[in-house]
Length: 320
Ligand code: AN0
Ligand code: CP
View 1 (cartoon, rainbow, N blue to C red):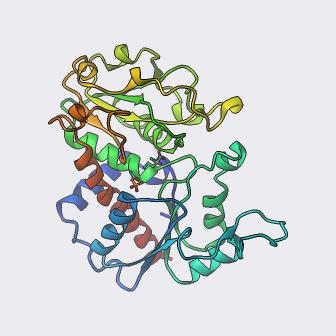
View 2: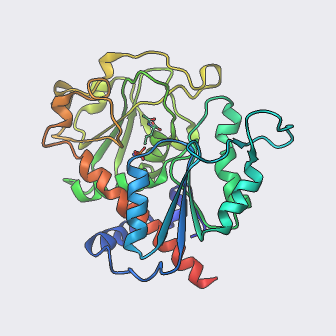
């Protein structure tokens, strides 16, 4: 595996799930695979889970890991080619990327949507430069449009908790005070569309996601109707995608908060969220603390999804 940016990079999804479950059964089975190899984790944005789970996954494989927090201690990076660098940015990404590549074997990149230019976000301007110029396998740790390590962990979690062969999975928009990227819902849709589930997306009008990720998923604008008979409720906020209000918040509609009354419409659904979550905006204390909340095992599976990706990248290094 040379890149991990979307569901297709995993190849057959059932094989990937089985591999994840094997890794989980014995996470030290490949503890020498990563000997003398180094993964560099480059963060342009904050993280708790991605940072720790990626380092832990690397340790399980016997790899070294290095973390670069671009905003803390590194030179400020220019990302536009052709500008005269007479401002506050001391280094260009075009030098920084190959230099980073020189010190490691695999690179993980976190670079959120900036909501400054829809075109730049959609073209994955930062991540794609790492893929092009680093000379290393690169995986997304949440890029402008996708968070595949999260969605893979979500799928593993659904596989573990599903009460029937073909569960109903509902992705619901929920309110948040800040404009958040579409990366998490995009990748969740990307994976659910390939999985053996009945997938429904519910959100207020105006919050339609990129059709490239939604594909044939059912859209239901009535949240309560969407919740009926659901086996999994996956809550997430995201900002507007459409051109005329890209990156904006249309409403903080508190009617969309996931609460116990809405959960009672479901078929005893499990509650999921990628975290970090704002309590009593996205979900009530009562629901996130309920026995049906699986946000902690979901976060724990981030170690597993990352370990499968690192394992496959290490295996492809051996072949080269
Ligand atoms: C980020 C987001 O919504 O994309 C990261 C989620 C994993 N969330 C926040 O910035 C709160
Ligand atoms: N879910 C997730 O990616 O969390 P962090 O932003 O803390 O890494």
